[in-house]
Image (cartoon, rainbow, N blue to C red; front, side, top):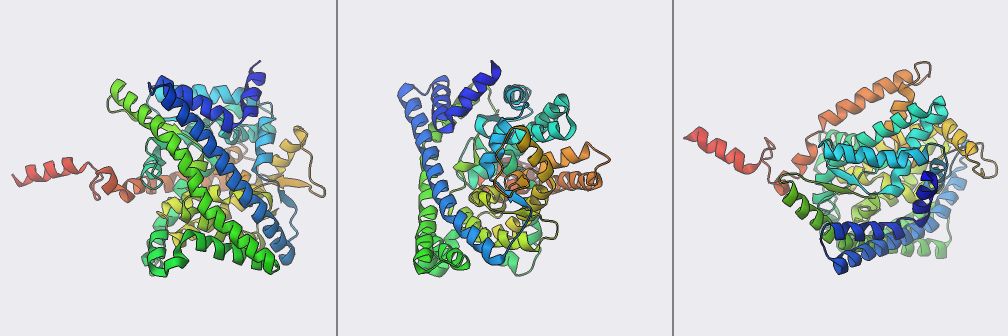
Length: 472
């Protein structure tokens, strides 16, 4: 019964169910039927628009990347099958029907006990949390252990969503929203640490390369539509396309950089009345308490800087696949997921494209390691649920599957006999220390916007009162 209900909801997809959920949510928030229905439908249209642009990106970049692979003569054993396959495999495992209601219950408990501020309604991306549980299940053949791991990853994801919510508001312009998207937000402590290290590098730390600065410095060549054109031409050239193919790819990438922000703007237009209604109700019923709506990272990937870095990372990702000695995965189907993969690399850099590329390289180096290391388990999961392997593929993985940092750490920590047990201990310690090291960096970045004193990170009014009292 539970599985049938879950399958029915998942089969409808976010473009159908999310408008329904948001309309009901709007009514509960007393936004009125007309306003709630309009917001819900607008969100659905926005999701369809975003997916259409991602489809354009995937259809254009996939063949170009394949052409580059052939030119480079890459011959790696593990095939990148793409996130849709990872999602389908995860939803097809025995853990899935139990995990979805349990994650929702955990979220409600954490909200009610003030352990999180995020209400995660992004049910379709629960597959990332299910993936963590499923990998554990097939590694140890223990359902209880698998569910425990899935719930631990869920709890950490909610805490990361809370921590990064100010960046979602002040960098992406979405107030009252957080990104409870485990395989993207789990990179935030790492990319903020990488960004802090870049702060110490002479020369590079002074470069201003956000889209607004590039527009002022390079005129029309700093415009997103021209950046997309140039990047598309470059990728087409590296792929060995003829003149027509190069020009076509250039225009397609220009279209992606222009259309994506407009589709995301539709999503934001629908979210504004819902998020404002939620904030008003919470402030009225629970003064001083904030609640964020946890949504898909798709709603923030459309910024010019993020899309530019994602396109630049296409050839760099292939280069990393060649030169990293531990990598065994051939990147292929998941190139279209790069805008998601690099989102916190760019956000940590506040849209600075140069810093975003550096942070993204660090991110992809970790992705290739995890994707290679988890390929055996991903392949076992695929065979167990009857996945039809592509011809010649002996092992499967993906850029998206390799983005699960926290699940990898936990799974490897559970087996002291595994060769990577010691590495997992160091990784866990490093992750915790990095997160502690940068715990206040988001507040520092947006101290002015948040009304905080840049040095003490306390409200400006309180600091002034203390100063006045000291002088008196």
